[in-house]
Length: 379
Image (cartoon, rainbow, N blue to C red; front, side):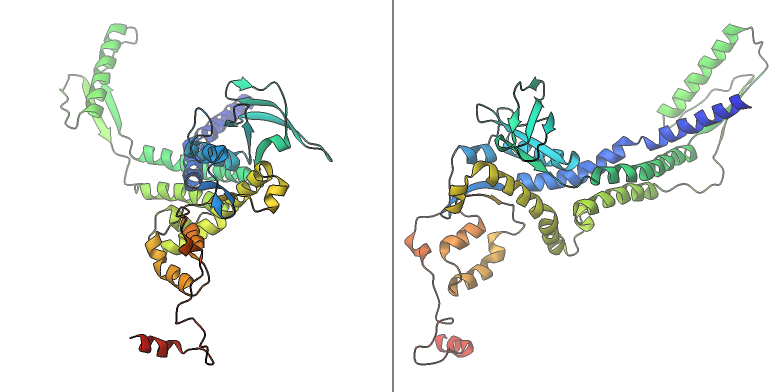
């Protein structure tokens, strides 16, 4: 009885192991959500600003073109975001050649009143022999330690359900057949091997060809059996389980679910929410760290900044009416508007002026002009 109990437990354990280890479902969900965030941020422009102008120096080149010898800027920032979200932290080292490399492994030594140190820093196959101070590295923290336990916990439930649905679908669509053979002596190995070879060829013919003709053999009967009248498990239910798992992770990361699935209803509103609650906080975190490590206190007081301009989901023609109002009302000058639109600086004195059109100007003889009357006069 004890042996039978142990065998039963082993069988259940193997079943759980087989149905829960659907790692591709977990990877699909993480890759879908994290890659969306990483690709969005990788399209941002990392600018060094001083007096309203962009300084295109070595730092600008490293951030936007080639951080190191083996990566482009887009690949670099995609890797940073992936490690930041998945590992909850990311360490970037500046080498002696001013390359920016992402650490794969390291040990952080924390102090109460002194700078933390990073030792045993490994980048791919290379291990640095020295330690790095916190002021010498770019260290980003996602501050969401419960994200990975949440994903692992959800995956334990969704993965088991997903695996069982897959196995159920396979069993319901399985072709089952029986072969009746006249009595053959168990000691006649040649006859047994001959029959087995014939069965294997029949099975291969049935699986490989859409139309199969099986010759009738004396003493040999092949018959297929259907799975009964049970209703077939719809593939849509399997897709719903996968989508449900992805939706839970997207919600945890601040990605609108409808935007992730490509729904066209209120796409502008969903994109705005995605930028505001998912992308902007990450860019603020990265921008604060870059300013703290690459801009001195004195330079910061004098207006030097590392500014991150994220990708815009609208083009300049969508903002043409708003730009005209801002310019004609004197709220912003030409340089400020060009900067907001992502256009380069142009050395034109006209753009420095604040212009107020007649509709917004004050009547010198008393009171404000009625805008409607002014428009009629102009016509």
